[in-house]
Length: 386
Picture 1 (cartoon, rainbow, N blue to C red):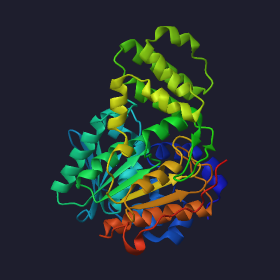
Picture 2 (picture 1 turned 180 degrees about the vertical axis):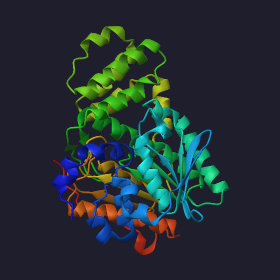
Picture 3 (picture 1 turned 30 degrees about the vertical axis):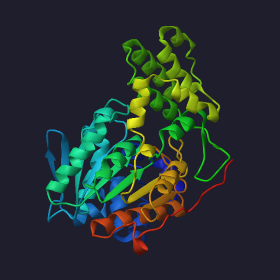
């Protein structure tokens, strides 16, 4: 079995690009031996199919370049299901080379994989246009006669969840996703979060990416061009150093820009809702349009989340499951796994990833992961508030 230290350190550089696009880690060798087909697919996602068993036993997939998406199809046979894949923030979009081992591995496993262009994600922000892009992609796959799963990674979980409620998709997969915009803002600014039913706050130090990314999302909706430019500078400073000085930028901002900056600099969780309310209406409207908490969620959802995630806490996947009707959510929490890079995935986490992949493959074969013995909420570890 591959040791956690090898996964977390020796191969960290090679794993980082993949983990930016999909928070799945293949426990090489061990996964293939104990995980069956799920382990073989996970191994290929980590190392690239050409170096693994999946590449040896399946033909190369066909990649089609379409006007608004890339479509990957199995090299032999008819697709047994379709995954519309929405990566997180990436300026390269569908051309990001980090997507290729993921899309190729899933195509070799019998899926059609459609990667649509998402204007918001490519501009490193949240944009309702991404919901429409996901709906068009799902409709195209449904028109081809294929069952559709919408997969949203990180912040792209929002358009996947919202696009998936019109009946075009029979499964939604979120990876390091979120349920409520307010909770996302609270964690990004303060590091506070809590699971459903908890009164007290859990406290974790958020990754610098969290406040930086949220500020970019807010800045993009501001009407003043100078505000947008200055806040992008602030966001990039925060992503490089959480305590970076920003005082020199304040005089250049309008009152709306200062309200946005004050939001990510707030440190009291209970004060964040008021900070959100102080944003200009156009910003609040955009955030509301991308807030899954405002939608009636009903589509079977498989939520996979690392317990070591410091960009979006795992409690957000728990909240997502709680918002769905009973029996319509499966949560797989992964010990030792983060949002972008793993902290060293132990055996328990490796087994959780195999479980998640088995659920996806079972859906490919016609099962409903939310029904019968396939369903249930998997929580290998749920630490108490700290």
